[in-house]
Length: 247
Image: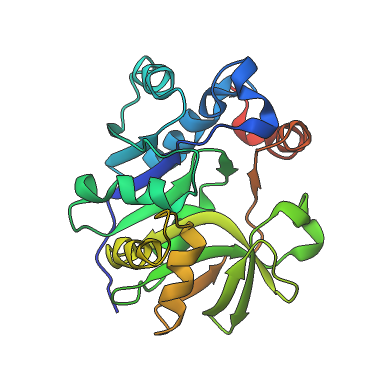
């Protein structure tokens, strides 16, 4: 087991946000939720958790996203990586951060997921497998907003058996928060190399780790989170998190 304290987070902020029509307004990571953008809320939570450094992977409208973050003068030390293939799958955005991660363990978060800080604490206290990862999952299936769109996870105890949006049999949902070793990059690269277009999802990398029992979960319990990727999800997030996130 690897119990090294993680001081770094990689945040994926490269997508087009097509379901929020971000081509007609601000880029999705800069979407305001109760007066503060999604990406800054993610940075806020990791800063509160004691994380010292963030690597933010941009892609679509990269300059706008980066300038929107820089202008905030956030106290968390921030570096940027760019995924030029942002129209492809999210595994390529993870790979874009590899050089800046430079062999360290790291948290991984999506820029469009909001969550309570307790989820970071849960991950920080989990045992990180050697050359593996830990995924924070929600087992409160009756409370998931838009479950059809969620990434489903099948577990056996704390082991991930399968992970995919189209799973028919599952007992947990992916919250978009991980604690990772650099071995994830290798697994994504190996999965991408098997395709003629070089594409790969993050779930493909996680699935590769399940074969050696290197991918496990931690349960967020009563913790709250929300993937904000549709107009309905924006409304739901504001209702669920207003008191926590109001500025």
